[in-house]
Image: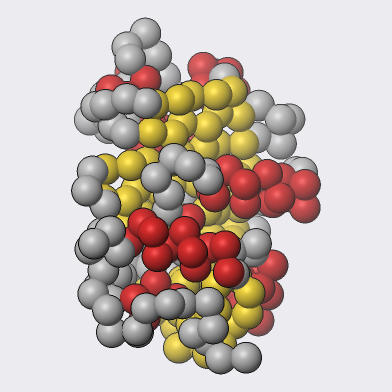
Length: 241
């Protein structure tokens, strides 16, 4: 089976939307690890992690190592089949354009739910932002004791839905509103949910363990065949004309 079986569009078709962030991170104990102290990426474990995802049908090609700080541009249909995934000791993280959504499927939550079943002792953090006519975000944090929050919608607009208990997550991790203000993040649970920066809160919940944007961490760049459902969703989202 080829790597294009589920696409109905040519590989060079230009996207009309863009995703600036579509990642899911699994942090195993100890949670106080600093990303600067993590061991090098383990390519075999990284590929194994990618293959385990519901969005991925198969890994077609290993494109080599890529720094976490390198920008990833989604310009053509072919770019949508490239995922960046790393396995650095007790941290695993994947950036997959198939996690992007317009609020109908919530693929990030679905994948996090599966990972929660596989890794009940882990802290799971997801951050997705996509621009396809308007900005849509999906962010979540899931702690080992089951405490979690999931925020999904259109920043500054409706609908925007928050489930779980973000205040409990913040309390358990010792994250205060003042601490977020020091990071120049606007966050007030008394305000409308669509006014808050949920992605920044999710980032704070990873703390020093966050591998995103690190120049000192390499990850595996893999060309994959996405599942039929994930491919169909990306066609609807990234090709609106």
